Image 1 (cartoon, rainbow, N blue to C red):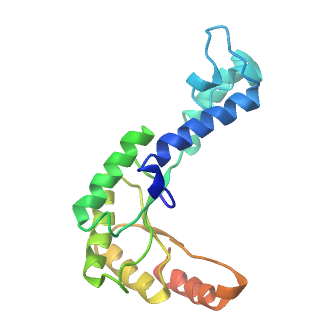
Image 2 (cartoon, rainbow, N blue to C red):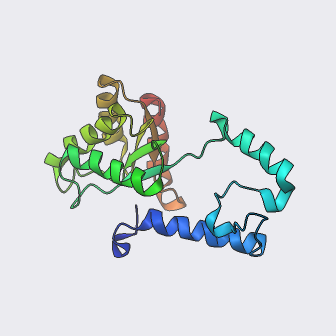
Length: 190
């Protein structure tokens, strides 16, 4: 997870704690007839808000595939992940912490081409291995330029792995690069 170096990899746990605290504030700290509070109930359990009939219909709605929780994560390549297997292990560890069966998207946080070019293939193969192992439904990249995006796209096509996203920094200062990325995304079909 980005920006969590000082959190010792506990970002997912802390996110869950934040979510429960937010729910408790939202519901005013109330508990239901079973003594459940927002802190020990899933976030989608709306029993206190809409009543038991509403909660049951909400639970049925949330069982449909369209309403399942979708989780994406970014993997920082260097210095933590030097091999393709380290990406697979990171995905497994993240899914265990999140208590999820798979990631919607597994993203490489940045390209290593400019400072550790020999690692770039491990990044790409690691992401593809996550997909092949069923740990991710698709893959993506972040902070890649147009040339690297087209290269990774070609490799993912060769491995028949869907490249779903290319996240970029976007501002008035980077507008020209963003335009180039839009063209590359169209060509890469992501």
